[in-house]
Image 1: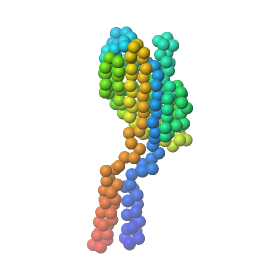
Image 2: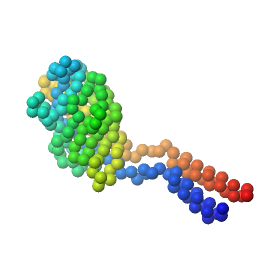
Image 3: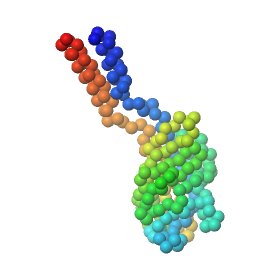
Image 4: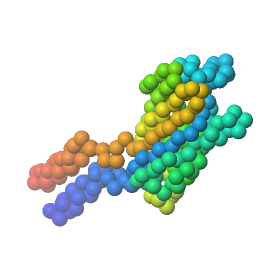
Length: 203
């Protein structure tokens, strides 16, 4: 094996070890929304005491008088979503205990968020705060956006019999340090090159 062959082999090895998602086009920005809801207890009775709420219903629902959820603002990748766009919510949403829905928690335009975790961080008679972690998805193949890990925070109010809520969704991080893994991979590649050279010299 000559020197040129060794260098070519080392080059292929280095490229093979480098991460493939360095230039991943992740979803960026924040999407905010607000709307109406109703809270029901385990006996399916409407309740304004959120500490007794078992599940939440979202609109639009003319039968129960629940207003639709609308987009209030969007930045970054979400800037293409028109303000006041109607959001499709997963309903009912179980909150006692908090359980992430099987499908997307919300969908609007080409974007959706599917939660893998959902917790209750605050629960008082007049206020309920839910927090979740999941994956943002953009169904528009032309955008080039890849699935992105994101956080979701929603605040529900039930003051004076008025039920309203708002939420904010955004990527947890659009640039995650690799903790030196790339350097370790490069070190392994050059170590393999040194071994190849030593074997060549031993012949």
